[in-house]
Amino acid sequence: MRNKKSILLAVVAVALVMGALWFTNRAVTPKAATWEDVLQEAKLGGYRIIKTEEIWERVQKNPQDLMLVDTRQEWEFRTGHLQGAVNFSMEPTAWSRWRKQQEMETFLGPDKNRSIVFY
Image 1 (cartoon, rainbow, N blue to C red):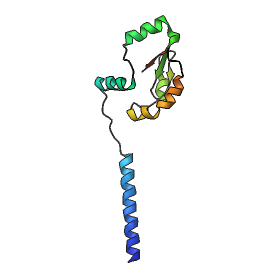
Image 2 (tube, rainbow, N blue to C red):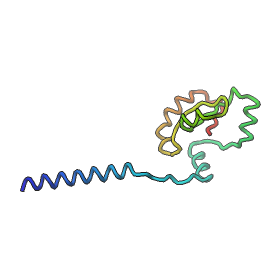
Image 3 (cartoon, one colour):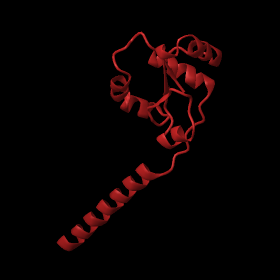
């Protein structure tokens, strides 16, 4: 009787572990981001959306006051980026941005007068 309980307990434990591994490692197709999602994230993060033309004007006027942050993966950054941009790779998810918030604040430094553009 004791042996049957041990076997049953082992089978249940294996089933739970396999179920947890399946659930946490399954592929999840992310929802395609819409412009409304971008605007909502900007609002929640305290960012101001600016147009490409405004970035170009700022680069032409005073490039040293503009910090371009490329948030793509490092290998994507190496394939090509805007001149003067720095790489701070992160996944394009709210979870990743939340996880890296402190690291990003350290990366950007205390200069609050600098305009920062993420792309």
